[in-house]
Every structure is written in C-alpha cells, then in structure tokens.
Amino acid sequence: QSHEHMQERTLLLFLLFTFSFYQVVRADSDAAEYAGIIIPLFILFCCCCSAGVIALFRMRRPAIDETLLHKPNSFNIYRAKTTCCYDCFSSIFSCLTLGIAFPWLHVDRLREINRLVVFSGNRAEFNGEAMDYCASVCCINTLLSIVTFGFWQCCGCAERKERKWVDSHLRLIDFDESDKKINTAEFFFWQASPGCCQTTVTLFISSLTLGLAFPWFYLSLVRSNVRRMNFAGLHANFFGEPIDFLTQVCCFNCLMNIITCGFWLCCGCDDRRRNEWLDKHIEKRTEVIV
Image (cartoon, rainbow, N blue to C red):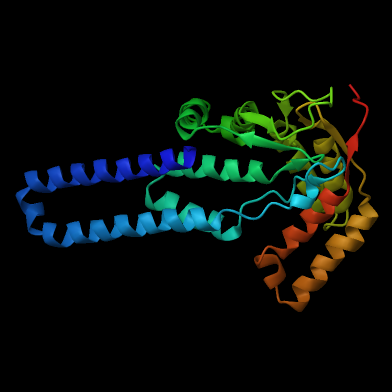
C-alpha cells in the first residue's frame, strides 16, 4: 500500500511541475516560441522518469533465503542489501529530480533492506513513510548542519539520528510467541553500528600498517556491533577469528581481484564474500550481558 502511495505522490509531483511549467511558458512570449520544442522534450523526460521508477521497482527485490527463517542461529544481517543496479539507478533518478524524489527512494531502499534482515531466524517489518522521514530526519539534519557549519554531519550525528528513526519504525513479524524474551517494539539494531570516530581510527591504523592490521581492527568493530544489537529483545555474538578472516576472505579476494583485473571488486563479489562470511560467524546469545 505504501508503494502505491509513493507512485501516486511521484505522479502528482510530475503533474504539478508540468502545470507550473505550462503557466510560465504561457506568460512569457519569448518562451512561447520554444514551447513546441521544450514541451515535447519535457514530456519525454517525464516518460523516462516514469520508466525509471518502474525499472527500479523491478530491480529492487532480491529473493529472501527461506531456509534461514525460524532457525535460532540463522542470520542475514550484512548480506541484507539492495541490488547494485537499484542503487545506481536510484542515485541517477534522485539527481534527475534534483533531490525531490530522494526521501521516497531512500525510504523504499530502507524498506527493502529491512525486509531481507534475518536475526536469529526472525524478521522485522519497516513501516516508515517518506514524508515523516523528510520532516523528522532530512529537514532537521539539514538545518543543524547549516547552523553548525557542517559539524553535525561530519561528527556522525546526522547518521545517528537517521538510524534512531529507522529503529523506531521496526516491528517484529512472524515470530515465536512462546519466547518470553521477545519484545516486538524494542529495537536497537541500526543504532548499534560503529560510530564515525571508531571507523576513522580503524581505517587510519590499518593505513599505517599497510593493511596488515585491518582484519583485527575490522573484526573488533564487527564484534562490538553485533554485541550491542537488540533485535526485539534478541541478542547475538560474533565468533569469527581474524586469522580465518584473513585467509578465507582477504587473501581470497585479493587473489580474485588480481586474476580478474579488478572485476571481482567492481561486480560486488568482494563485498558479497565478506558479508557472507560475517553472517555465518554470528550466533544467538542466550544470556544478556549488561
């Protein structure tokens, strides 16, 4: 239903813009001379944008692995991503509309990502709306970034506010009601992601060591991230070892990038192998550590 609302609002924006453009051309005699060329081009642009919206909806749905559902140690967290084609066309379409369509496209992307998340065999539903996202996140972050001369954005406060908004619009679906630990409205999932300072320090130290320390510092971030997650009262631990990550992921990806002249990285296979390895080394935590 929300997808239909998004299509209706997009169509309404096109109609309003077309009407405004027609009024400008009608009032300006000089512009009227070029109306025969500009209006058909504008209609063609609208058709291309409409075709782009349809293509985005067709490309955006990767399949859910049904074998992961209702299994305590099944996780699909780092692999929960939209397709590369969807992200690419979404960015292009957002630029073509001068950012007007960004809230709708971004909320739709968040909805698809959360649809793919599986945490200890359980799934959640994202019910956020684009207009609420625009008012509660985009406008506030933009205003505070202007007031603080960009520090609000650079310090990660804008991203933290967005993650909090996303968590507040998650609700658990299709779960085992006999599990007393489950709280369908309690989420600290996306907010558990490492902060800007932690990520910067990790990248800086990894650069100083020419990447040799990357597995140890990167997995420490992942371990901290997974440990802080609260998925409707469910918790998890990460048990991956840096040596295994180095041999099974880093070395393998480097070798494949050399063999394929970088196509392994460009096609997203590098990220896919890393994310798959991370998800397979997550297990359900039975005891909550405060």
